[in-house]
Image (cartoon, rainbow, N blue to C red; front, side):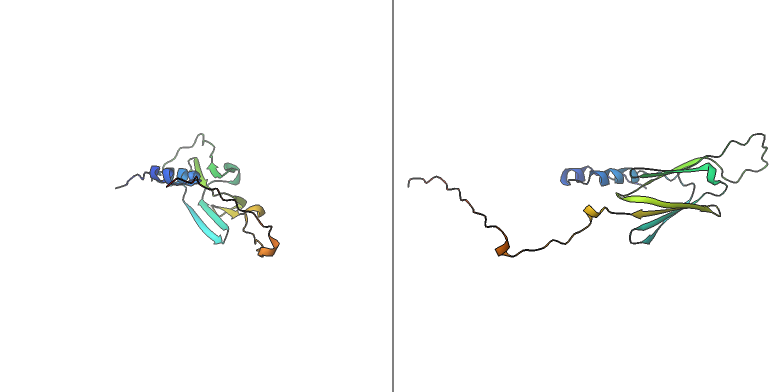
Length: 158
């Protein structure tokens, strides 16, 4: 039994997490019929990942891979077989399109096809301005003195 999760209460109490919550909602509705081609996702380092897809029967010319912002799309298109009479057709050669939602600052750094496996290497590259930085703590003598003003309330007669 599958239950659909309602993320609407999280939208009311969180600020700045809309993108994450919007990504979780469709992920909870993934159907099991979309299971071809098979793939693995492996973490190969602190900020490195590898997606390996089983694309047996597809040549390099029949595969396309594009990255659009935070979406990686891998597609395979087989040319139609003309004048082929199959006695048994058990090798899956149908067209496919597989989409992977990528986190911010994750980029494809390379891809290779060997022995029917398409390997896609990904790396998270955080820009310098977003990396943690050390902040110097100054003493009281180095900081300019700031005057504080007090607002007095009206005095009431007793």
